[in-house]
Length: 282
Image (tube, rainbow, N blue to C red):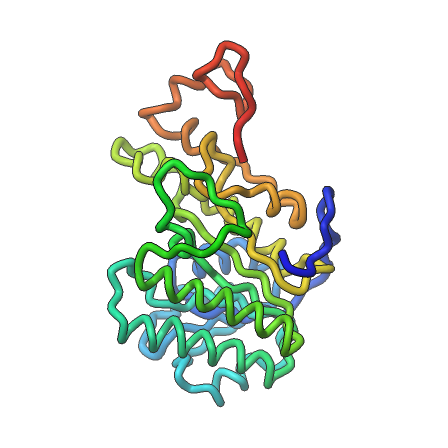
């Protein structure tokens, strides 16, 4: 957490209708966030040239912008309170050329645009893939050394490091949110959903967390993990709970048909493998 305040209760949140720019707004996370947050934020929803923005017009202003166009990106950031930076090549099989252009150079341009436009805050969409190189079954704390499992993860490590530099040396506030497997509760109920057992983050839970990251006060830089309240959490969310007041509502194992019968009759968060129901690890 660097110089972030160490507290055991959530930090205060700003109120009011903040002006928020969302990059990558035509993607799944961006569309869902726009839909749920339009009544609380003044949104400018951006995506790459050629992206279909027609379904976003009901939620805010829309525009096309290539992350390579620093001047245009800077203009879009003027007057904003925060940029939620979701734009990226999100394929875990992405090659170097695409990762370099979209996720590294594009992210540098976004942070630089915020600095030049005097937009004070960036919420950066990082990923579990920044630490997916660790052995399966290990729970990962936000301060564990990065350990990417692919080039996409490498690019997210770069974004986190750049965000810290921009916070420490250039005066921005940066919150990096390491997202797990973003899915709906309905997807977790499918018979082949076991792959997301430790990383599932329900859409409603992530939207809540992103809003809190946009509004939280008293943090200059931080890395925050984003998974739901799953009985096993690949990413430790205790810091996210303590500093942001994050209260996830979903648990993958209670949704999945493979596991939910184990939890029948047990209070939320109890371990079905013990008669006393040991606490759920964060």
